Image (tube, rainbow, N blue to C red; front, side, top):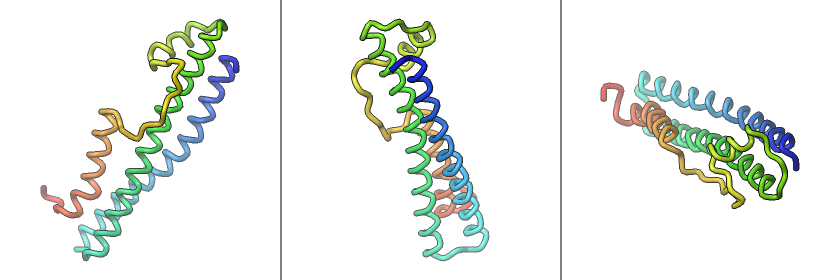
Length: 139
């Protein structure tokens, strides 16, 4: 596989992942809106449980999408490192990507553990949806 094919494959992967990201971001908004409506309407326990489950599933799926974004970059850096190790010429951009992403010849694994910024996002959205629903809007 050439360097151009590696970038093309990464681009295609990121485009497909972006579509899922848009969907789950919208569903996070729906979950937040559902929580607001439940709070304003004094929802019962079943509605709170339903909104909580929907919010948790949406957060999990959004985290999965973010994990695939990171995995796409790691996979591309790995492919570039393998290409470089095979003796092929790599552009300066390819070399910088290998260095910045930490690409090695070891195959990367998909990790669902979010980085610091993603963790902060997930915690804050989780509170906005679930915390407000169970603890009330004044805390």
